[in-house]
Image (tube, rainbow, N blue to C red):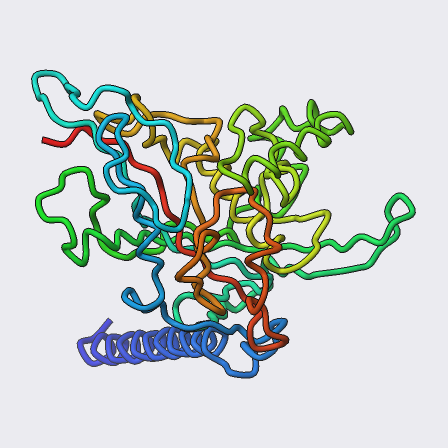
Length: 359
């Protein structure tokens, strides 16, 4: 091959390489354009069922600050709840020790999590009603009914939960140099749309196989006692399969088989989700003598550890049932909580009991 032929062939190879590069870049740009349209297209977002509603939580005006109480030192209630809220059992002795560290056994309630509870997928209620569109159909829930079940009209509903870290007291520096407080920044910790165990009750049996033991009239009848106890004082922890007046804890997903309203059904879905996190060892115990020196494993959730306060659509910031325990009757807390079309997505602030050995 002569030099002229070699240079001609070389120029042809370079031109072919440039053409392949341009085609590759064009394909990449087209791919990003398609993905961008799928994620941001208003038409696609409007195609998902329902309009997401909600508003940002104001940490000053939308929080029931009286839910911090009662506070205790040992078994002594040093700051009672003016609203008459009951407290869990606290360690008897005021002095505690964690290894060589000696301190005071203190008990208090702390706001630690925010939760969106909605039937609309990807609806972030507490983030101002933001609705994200991932570009594919996943986790669509509905409310249906009435359907004839056992000769009675019964509604069913399906809910999604978004779980946020929300260590409010730590952010606002209400208590300085308090090592027992939850620390960190706001973050989305869990989204049920991508959890297959939350979608299918059969798959949920993987983490709650004991549910078959309580699927009988006798076990369900015992939940009436839990309903009375939760409404009057605190839920009954030995009846762990019950969610009081809301129904049964099983299955540990958002499929509510007996829905009598948005408030009842959403609180039941949130209680099940909290139990699910404990069963998966994501959430731990913080109450009682075992919690003085740190959190501990609690695969069977103690219902007394949590209280739920409504933040959306209408914040509940006062009264005895502003931050009601799991299973309490919703009769006294449902008024004005749901508005047709513009206020059907629920938001909650989760309060957790903390016993800690304070220096």
